[in-house]
Image: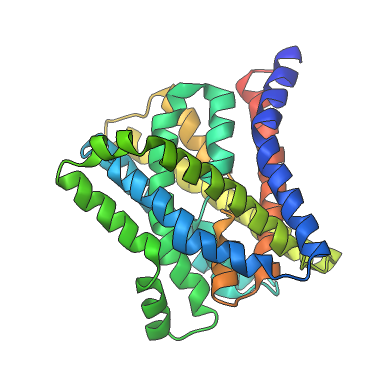
Length: 313
């Protein structure tokens, strides 16, 4: 039990800044008349997220790294397919495509990386970072499109998706990498990239808190979203183990230490960026914030239970 308590304390310490930012956002949303949600979501969408996306694309090395990114995108796509099958069967007031986006968009940046470091140490970073890059690309394309579709036509949603800066930042990063500017550019602007990443995480969590401040909570709404999230995690674990089984069947079994990190991805919550998308598209911000809040709670409990299983206690 001492080992479990130490692990949980490590996870809590790594997650504390993010939860604090959510709390600050919630307090500001309740106390201020300024629409900080619109301001911060704009700063993120048109400033901080493109910088971080550009930096991650700039650092991509072709080969195994690209393979991991493709696997991450494939996982998200399979989760969206699961969402398309499951969401219509769950009675909820959450917009249907927003709920489907929640199935495929996983919070790896501020939740998955700190948790992976606490559970598995630095060896987990290469996998989690590549999963994060794949998730960023998927979320800022398919994810953004799905949230847009709850309010706009197919053509309008595609136009809005094509206009968001992160998409072009990803392409610019890949182009710079292809011209041999990757390592030199990262080294010369490493401090600026790190600051942008920290600001993105902090502002992103504040946006979740600002969205939560608009919630009018009821047990009926929470119960419906809880059912949605539970099915999302069931689907996530199912997809992860199906992929693991497929690799084994093809004669390329995933080593146990890597398998544990991959399973962690199936336990992670919905990405807070869905609140940013909803704010930018004038969608259902309260529903997106409730999804993130419930999903984060369920993931925290699930990972704590799983950590006990990992330690064999």
